[in-house]
Amino acid sequence: MDGLNFEDTSSSFIGVNFLWMKWILSIWLILLAIAIFYYWKWSRSRTVKLINAIPGRKPLPLLGNLLDLDVYNEEFLKMMTIDWVKEYGPIYRVWLCTRPFVTLSSPELVQKILASSKHITKSSDYLNFSNWLGNCMFTSTGAHWKNRRRLVTPGFHFQNHNNFIDIFNEKSLNCAAEFERIIDTQSDTEIDVTYLMAKCALNIICETAMGQQTKLEKEKEIYVSNIHRICQIFVERVNRPWLSNDWIYKLSSLGRESERCINALHAFTKKVTRDRREILERHPNTCFDKIESSKIEKGKPQSKSRFAIVDWLIQASNKGADLDDNGIREEIDLITFAGYDTTSAAMVWFLYLIAKHPEHQQLIMDELDSVFGGDQDRPCTTQDISELKYLECCIKETMRLYPSVPFVMRSLTEDVEIGGYTIPAGVTVVPSFYAIHHNPCVYPDPEAFKPERFFPENSIGRHPYAFIPFSAGPRNCIGQKYAMLELKVVFANMLRRVEFSVSEQVISDAPDLGFVLKPKHGVRLAISKRLNKS
Ligand code: HEM
Image (cartoon, rainbow, N blue to C red; front, side, top):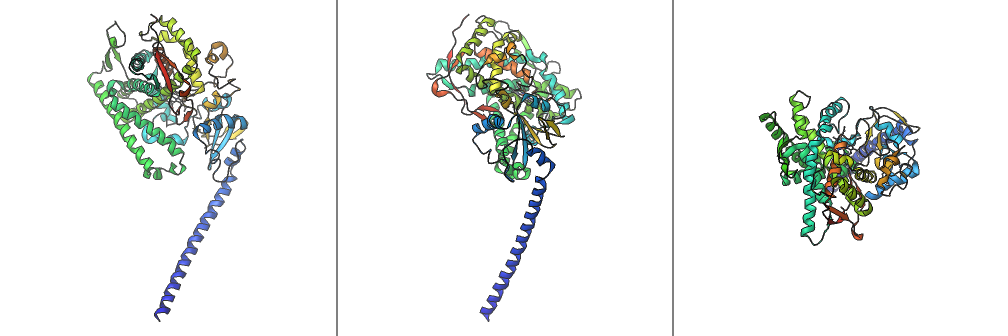
């Protein structure tokens, strides 16, 4: 009897289990059928038809071109900006699973997007920065973006350039002195220049944006290492599509690490804003940092005031602008982020290129000697800077070859006719500056370093969107003039004192395609002192 009972129980148990399995299987089959139906419907949708009319690699169902894109970083950049442009032309599409991207790489096509005041919405990928940068001008769109941009723009006005140039001079002369100290004290004068140039760019942006509250080296280093980590996390998140869901991301170790970095970044800028506000309240008329200009200009001691961009924003907020302390923090975080990595990458690429091309370095030095009369110490004035024409061509050629921001992404809010195709609303378009700058139809012999391309006589007839490292149109870089001035001052001060050269085993030009285009393995250069010509 017992045995019979046991068999009965087990067979009913198996029966119940089987029933459950049938149910689960049926539910799965129904879900699969629904998914297949939606996929079938989606694959016949207007968006998919319009996107597939644009040339590009054949996509796989569901995966799209994911497998084509699974290549090493350096190869990825070449494939997207050179190989596929050759194969498919200046407009091509890529499917990242079921998400389409349309890449543009001719000045004419890119102008159509960037020049328009309609296509100013950033792609949703940039919203990954929102946890950190909030609703700043970089991540926002429409009226909010317009308002923020209008409030921040005067801080970068030409009138403030004299104020910035003092800081550029001071920090870059310090940087040149650090190079000289290495030459004097080290037997090996072959160094990776990345660290010192990054430090120079960081000191400059921290002081122009936040004033002298940011003097502590350790605090700045922590601040910047958090910025670096956030940018890496941004790229890592884009590369792991399953983390695009905010809930999953927040629970992941990457999301938790990002939160830690963001809290530290916010604490830093909040403190700076609070301290500056207090100073402004105590001294409403002499609000800016008082510095002895004798520290900058030898033999001419007099007290000068320096203002920081944060002061500008606090004053605007005090005068009733729609900007609270949170908004100020957002914009200062953005300016520091946007102005640090981009310029430090441009500095490193420039030194690498002129070291590799000593004939051009010599021409820059000759120009500097003629403008400064061989004086190695005199700080640059805006007048000097306007005379450094050859230096400017070399900087532009550097940014052509290695634009710090190689592409931007815009989300279309309406259909656009472009290059004979219709790109539907909702799709992400990718104006690729790197691809335009390396397009042989725009720049013959595109991989060669030829600063003379930017001589006025050689620029005649070039399309206005053929050289756009700072983007263009209403959402271009707000710091474009600031950045060009900064780079010129830094190089004018460095190259009057130090010379750079490469030895065979130390060159590296593999660009690392992150948010900013940087040399993958750093740049090791041999440094030596220039003889004093005065
Ligand atoms: C070599 C240096 C620099 C390069 C190559 C560069 C490039 C760019 C590019 C390509 C954009 C994107 C525009 C778009 O999405 O269409 C941008 C935006 C921006 N840049 Fe720069 N930038 C540089 C330096 C700076 C500096 C020094 C600052 C500030 C001090 C700055 C502040 C900004 C801001 C605030 C935006 C956002 C503008 C907006 O969304 O309206 N940039 N930059």
